Length: 266
Image 1 (cartoon, one colour):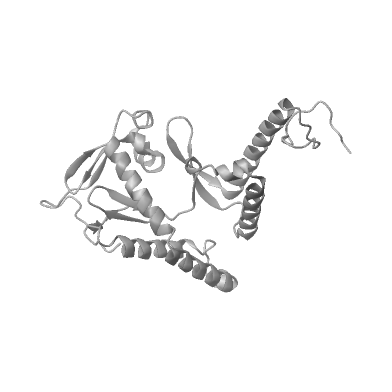
Image 2: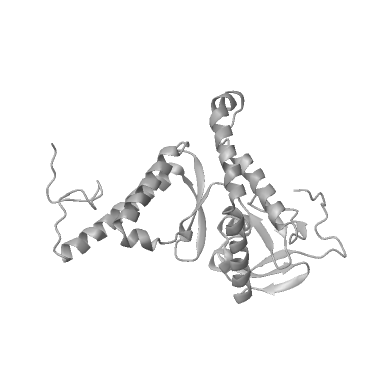
């Protein structure tokens, strides 16, 4: 990370820390043996009491929300930049051209993780160089972290899917042509996926007590997405039925495990 200081509590140095509330249900119910795992793998903003950035105490609240919005917008601008996509294209072409050779000589199934991490590091260093005060010396469960004026900014390039970050596309919901085009984009992306269903990924979801990170396999995520789509098909079926519109597809909105009055064994 470029910071080789091993004395994190050196006298005279400005202190940076995240303060976690011991009153959060997941923290208060976790024993000492599992407490560190709970903090690393299950923490979210609801657990945070405040942060200490460059020796200054910042209370969690509206200020934190403003900071989150500020840096999420910066990240969005950086990752939507043409330079980033151009470098991604180069990485994709290089991996496709050399995949068979690299897989033969290197015992590594994920050929993109290090390349993406280094690309992110380069892009963020380049675009935020005037705002970065220092490199955070020990990023936990992420790939790189920077000390900014008002926070410690963590960037993670691991395989993560945040199910709470979905945004609705109103055009797709209201325009059949846009919906069909969007469907074709999804199909094309699925056809280009070069992963194994048993590959491990992390999924972030809100199960009722705030965001939680859970380890999945890629196949499990696809299965969940498929079941969720069927669930929405069933809702569409109810709406069509109430509107008096007949949809002549007996399988639309039915999961193979859904009980039916009649079963056609043929």
